[in-house]
Figure 1 (cartoon, rainbow, N blue to C red):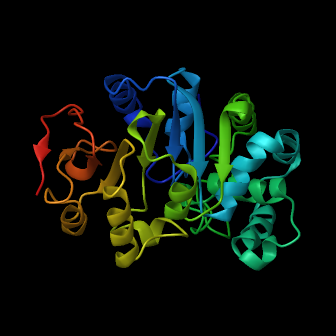
Figure 2: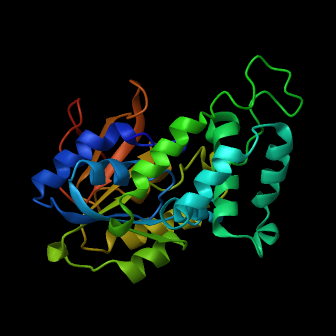
Length: 284
């Protein structure tokens, strides 16, 4: 299933790994939670393959929340906007206004959702806070519409929207979301995939990134819970320290899911997680 969003840090290459881990834990048919949804790539792939029964996603950024809300609850309206809106710098300038919270007041969810999609498909690397592809003067060889294939985007939205009855969407702080929505029991048939903003590159990639204290607060919260979870992070000394073996026994280093470079990202879990391709290394 193609994702309608371009997203920095999208984890589509983790699909086979997470599928394997769910099978190891005998959790097929479980409810899959993503407190930092973003593109929610894993949720959609796992639903499509019948690995999970339900997906519960949370996204703090209101633009992305309204996009996914529109996909499932205002599908026709969103598709109509995609089909009939011109892809030009005038539309980009109008959609850029939606980055201000005050501008969202009185707007329909699908209007906000479309603005999020438009910026995602027309900005550099899909980053909502970035500039448009080709620049505001459109003088580059690459123009604004080079990543905006209306037919493919509409198809992907229609494909994902078929899972409406299996999806719940929230717009909340990630920790507050987990406190309210998760049952803290290993036998509750839940699996939580946690993909917080990168420690180093987060401020440049995301509108809602974490401070040092927020990264620590998240670590303290996760390590105190009993539900099965998998966490992905950029590999930094600071993150290693937060999740050292004194408080999190099963902390393994694996190869990056984005490149072949070792040490790009780490996978952390309360489970006995298997290696991805290379031999796992205990951290801490």
